Image (cartoon, rainbow over all chains, first blue to last red; front, side, top):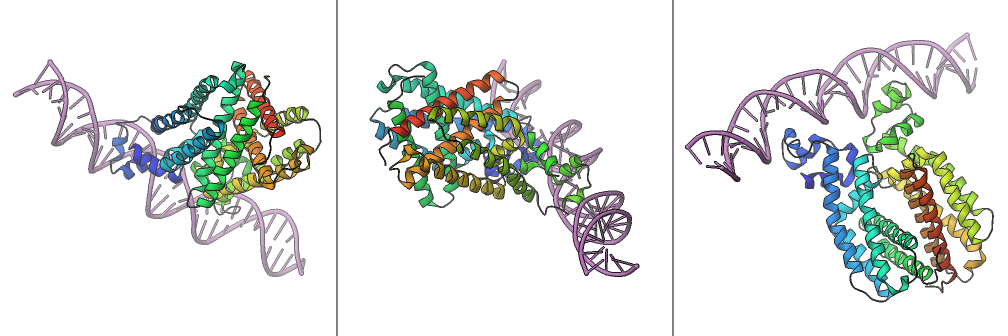
Length: 191
Length: 191
DNA sequence: AAGTTCGGCAAACGACTGTTTACTGAATGG
DNA sequence: CCATTCAGTAAACAGTCGTTTGCCGAACTT
């Protein structure tokens, strides 16, 4: 049922999804839906949770191995690219419903992105570049990184519908932007 | 009719909007809708165009007056804050449909954001800090600024539902992030 | 003054909707 | 082996939906 929903949400909104539609796609009777979810919103938050597993893994794999700033940037962008390619449906779902019409789903996504920012902030604190940074500044930087990741992933999503050149251009731009941010980071004097 | 649609889209998706719903809200008969639009998607792109007027004005008012980096940042964030407060519905609409389920609307928004980035890039080129910057680097920076603006506006949108403290925190974070970017910009050596 | 466009209406069409109900077979557990 | 839970079904309910049609008055145009 989750798969059926995700498949339908490829070119549709959660708010415009119908119970019958989902069950039809899943090859079940309409009533069967209510055996598993009370709401379509509930199916939505279930999909959010499903999408998170893969996202968390991704973040870890960027932060795990150390290395110079340049390699770290390259690896981050590579991982994002691969993630969008391999989990296209999940990423599209998150991008679409992050500001979508279903409040509970929106809040679930937002809370989780906040947790990501916290995780990134903790990892940043361990890097030598961050010596002397206040808690607040670290959080600010982490949010900047997460927002940038989200923007890049969204752009890739729109591009990857069969346009590899545009995809490469987006990745290149993302790398430059990360380099600029990392430059600002090195010269930061505290707020 | 546009107003009615915009009002309904406050807690709904364009894809889940109904013709009858709109006309009911507008106090008209269902058939009246087709006198003005062939589609609901058409109403969507009309709303996009409506939302753009105010956005363009906003961008100009940030770029117009010169000034030091700090003042420019403060003014930019102030303008965003005010814009979200005063054009809440339009901003919400753009954020929601930017990755929404209606392709034509999505494309219209994307094209317009691209035009904004170009406009910002042209303005950046005039600033003394940008001496020696390549066209590509300027575009990259402009996109970074635009994406950051969009992220900030979205965050403010979610917050402003009656939580002024959170709103102030978001604005403060945005200012710090812009300062960090502007720092990276000053030390940029070209790609 | 005549003709034409414009924006509106009511009514009707069949198709689709969410949800509840009562029922069924299979697996599970004591 | 009996009871219970689980995951499914068909059928029915009253609504809502998008869209078309034919009609109407007002406002322009000539």
